[in-house]
Image 1 (spheres, rainbow, N blue to C red):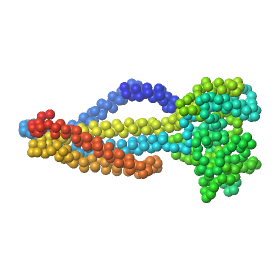
Image 2 (cartoon, rainbow, N blue to C red; image 1 turned 45 degrees about the horizontal axis):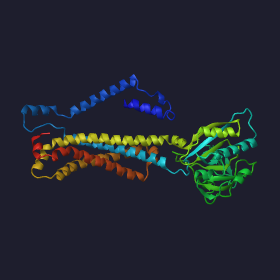
Image 3 (cartoon, rainbow, N blue to C red; image 1 turned 180 degrees about the vertical axis):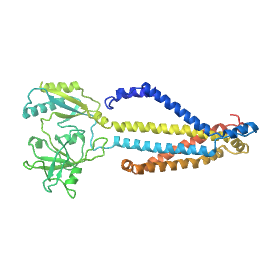
Length: 455
């Protein structure tokens, strides 16, 4: 039932992000497989549980009718089970918290720009013949004015959004002759101020640069360090064609990273022409622009133009961060489930151990032992076992890291120390609860009940 509900949620919410999600279903094969695995697991654990009891000793005890005698699961086996529970729980919780923290950092990191409340539109030409570049430039400028006339629109950039529209450009440093292939984008004069991309040195384009088709270029700090690592890149000449005038670097901006990516590619930005059929809109806080609003603005410009796409950058960013969102939610749930199941297991084992010591507890209470001293006694008896489990989990984690160093090295940083402390504290608190809770029924009642063996 839970799986069916989960499939329904995935199909209704994530059908556009997860391929073939609509094919998920519970079939007779999966149902029979689940029943078979459940029965097999039950039989295996029943067999293991039965092997814990020494039936020969139990038979002897029953025949002798010895008062106060009983057969128990051995202390060594109980301690081994506690160590196993703590080891598995500690390792799983540590791994899940690490992945959760990494995903949250990827979601909340500053990528060097802001896209809040922005949308991108792309216009197509429906006429059989492509209008001249001058006519298209005039029409796109008119469309920009129509969009700015909308009360919801704060600003319009005549360029693709910061999330897409990058190409590759083969360039040469005129001074050194070194070749590069950075990502490139044509942008408008207000592009950098619109997305809040920080200027490190120099200046941005101006409207005059675009109108005069000046050969100027803004580059990011990664490319600036590559072409001149020992000085400023401002004023350097970058060529894309030996037969054409070279570009002059007039500005250096902070590197903008894509969501969910740690890559910092080399990038160059050049002035965009006005005939570019793609624009980025900045919408006022609390406002929205509908597809119908954009279509009406395009129709005002001319019937040969049509709206090709209209996308929210917030939705596009969330789509790029889908893996991180899914990882954060999944690891948080798995960490909680792991702690819950570990708590259930520890409670079961320690409850049994406490039950076996009820006569000892009753005797100590009868001769004047305080509740705190009895609680402290139980905790001390199990503290070493819990510490051993935590130690083994560290060894297991280190082995997993050393055998998969290339894959896991990206997750190793100073924050792991804090995550480890959180994991240890969680396991210790869970163990303390498992020690105390079964003990309550003995220390909160008169000692005679424990001595008589009454529940």
